Image 1 (cartoon, rainbow, N blue to C red):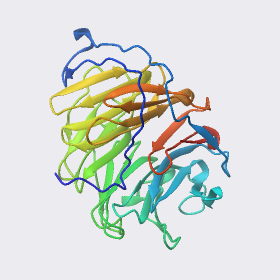
Image 2 (tube, rainbow, N blue to C red):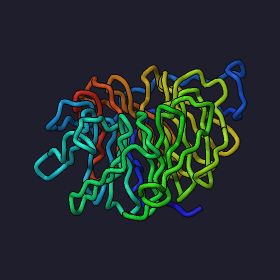
Image 3 (cartoon, rainbow, N blue to C red):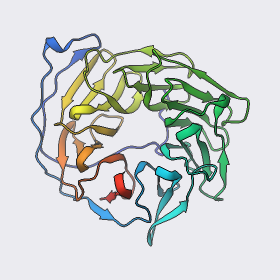
Length: 331
């Protein structure tokens, strides 16, 4: 499978404290004995610092495009990191009516950011020209969209949108009008997050403790997670046999193609997770300002300067996590 470019979110950070894990098959039950890891101690040697932002709105996602970090959030706000600090890109969302933006992703060349949100909002932003394109209400849908994944180059992207209706809306022609279709991978439970590792191959998680995979962008198979007993919030799809899921109760799950390995990092709901393709380094962030990093395959907790709920994290020249109240922390 061809590896996607480095515009996808990938994370690196060093730490020393470790936690234990236990491998489970996709159909394993809680009674078979999940190992609960002890909560790691704060060991970050590169502490996170708070950045000043031009908004008090909750920020739900963050991405790097053309070397610049962009974050989107409530009320349709978009901000970017500059040499002079964070600056507002636009207010009001895709159409200016204030629809919140919940998810974002970047084309493989880093030239366009796609974002989705409430009431069917779908937008595409050209970071070079500052042009904002409106692709809202695919197939007429006004559902809330929680996440988006895009593959391919600017202007030629495949676009996958996941939302509360349990449907994935997709376009293989850059979101052009009349090119959208949709599929319901599960029972209709809301879809929390979606991520693709190749042009038409990726994974999506729903609010019914299910993970689905596709290799054609159209049909989906259920691959678990049996008896997880927590909500799923984030997914990182690196290969058919390399998937990470973050969820409630501080739970992280890893799929190796045969088994799901659960790791318990405490009690915080973990909203986002991103891990390198070699499974050695990564980040997950969540409630109460909690941030954990994966180093040499072992998870550890970072100290952070905030108690605000964190929603997303991205790696770049500066690592950035965003969350409630316009919170941005960096290291």
